[in-house]
Image: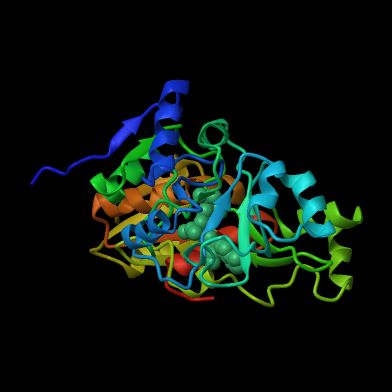
Length: 342
Ligand code: TXA
Ligand code: MG
């Protein structure tokens, strides 16, 4: 059976105009952002968003993020913009930070998961911003993967995931960050992190107070995950083969490969490829990615998981990174990919 493919567009102005018209007409358009590819639908068109949920296989109680072309559009979906939201938006938008705010009554319940809040962000990607400006709409866009799967960081990932279930994929190359946005409840006086991302707790603490991040925890509630995002309840980011996390260092990798004797191991490890290959000698090992730090692992992780799947490995072994800065977001995703719900 030949797979029917969606229409893949480049990101020239005429392509963005066409994609914008598809959104306006209630169609589904996948597009790149600085974090991951999103699957967009007209946020005021409840039927379009309902189809988005069906295509993704997404639980109805998991709200989607509304993407805006700029800060000025915030009033189109938020009923109230708190001083905290104003300050965070001024500092981090366009960028990988989603703000949860009281929703306007006319935002469809399918977008908000029938909650009184809405998550919003302005993405930092010229293609996303060009598309949002051309469509002149708030665009509801979850990550462009079937529910539970790794997020897509290239147009090819999206195409492989959805085939012709989406009308258009705008190809803007590989995503710069590779991890989904930080989600923050911005209704109160201090930000409450609902999902970790590349805007770190340290960034939020420093940004708000102008004091070293270590001291931000002195304020009650600051930066703590008291109420996780609905989406973080579900198994996520998981490829079709098991993922095993090992401690940092080559000892952990060697032990994992030994324990998997006879199996085909996919490896994601923190060392130059030749060093990892040397460790892997003797086993049936495919190096899926190497990285120097948590930021690089974050950028490459989902692609590595998908390539392991394609290579048909029995298990993907991933070397852990320290839980500091972006490492916290990376380890959150990895634990979920490994089936250790958080
Ligand atoms: O970087 C990103 O955020 C990407 C790109 C496409 O923008 N989008 C993305 O969407 O990751 P999604 O649907 O895969 O994840 C959205 C997360 C979920 O955990 C969801 O529960 C949470 O944001 N969220 C959305 N609206 C919310 C709300 N009103 N209250 C609490 N959490 C919310
Ligand atoms: Mg997602």
